[in-house]
Image (cartoon, rainbow, N blue to C red; front, side, top):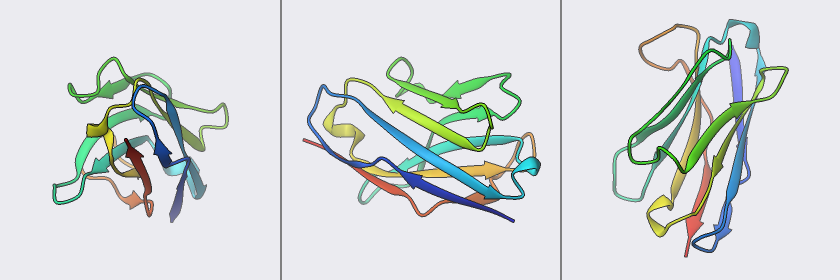
Length: 118
């Protein structure tokens, strides 16, 4: 199994930046891709960004393209989500997810970290 723990959330003013972290532990060698999702209050969870642990590619939802950057550390067990130029619409619970497959549903989820933009 894989465990995911997010951190870095908090309250921030619009226009500033924030970087979220997701630390993976357990059988991390089985992870092929990791992603960030977010869920605003009263809305469905939505995909934000994805990265292959091989480092070959990233993908972003159109709504965040250009402001969000997903990256990973050299050990490939920690994934980051940098959010630039925060806007109130970024307010949401942000979840990290990991998959042992190249596509399809994600197998593992973190508990989430709250981002509030005012």
